[in-house]
Image 1 (cartoon, one colour):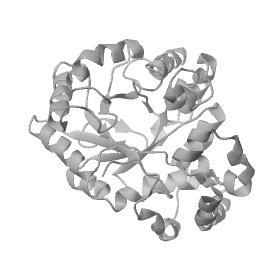
Image 2: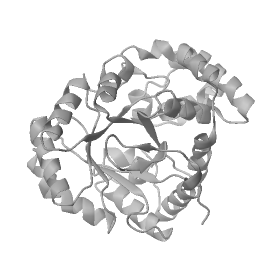
Image 3: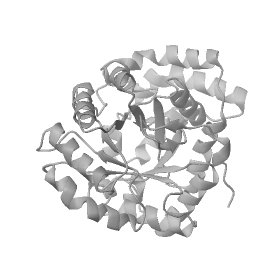
Length: 339
């Protein structure tokens, strides 16, 4: 199998020894076809399709994979594990990130459900375990105590959070520090059309504590590919929930068009795509602090996005993109981060 991982510079996740490529593969879409909110959001992904997507990710140098309990109640985790095995990947060859779903649960659920996660991953270890949302019935300290216990038991390698605001992230960091562990990451929404974490102290706090930001939705659910700007009628093919959750509208197209036009011009200079430029910017603007995770419903999607790993934007290009997208630093009504 072709593999480009040795040619790609990467980052450590926080103050752990876990080294990842700047771009990872998210597998929320592997829940497609499952009854439930996460499955209805996506079309069905068969095991064969998942195998092709994972193979493409590996062939193009990606060394980490992001999944979660709530992505089809373990369906995503199971498809991921099966796909990795079909590609000859063994435990320890890649980094696995998964998440505990906290809604209407206490911290005790972290301990009680961890074996379910390990069974779904079918022999692959959990390198990074996240609290998926700040919605638990237990305080952050209790959640981090439970997570730390899993590290001590050898059931997970490191701990992170997802969608935590600055205050809650600080609480998680301090609770783990008291137990001698680092808070590895905070996975939050971040892209050129939603730079909210730069104005609500999430990014500032992460840098202060040495916590890595994993940016989810780095292409703003496809808006940063430019295809909807080229053909607005394509928005009609999106599900109602996707259009409403991520603000797909003619007004958003016009508001964001100047950024897209600049990305197209820069992409043409590099023989690249708009999405590759957007991904290169997000992994280079805050070097050492931000990595990102992209989804793919086809093998060609991840092959295209992985090319951003080899795209070197000039400092002037990075600066221009920053300046054009600064209006999107303001609190975004579509941002899912907790304040």
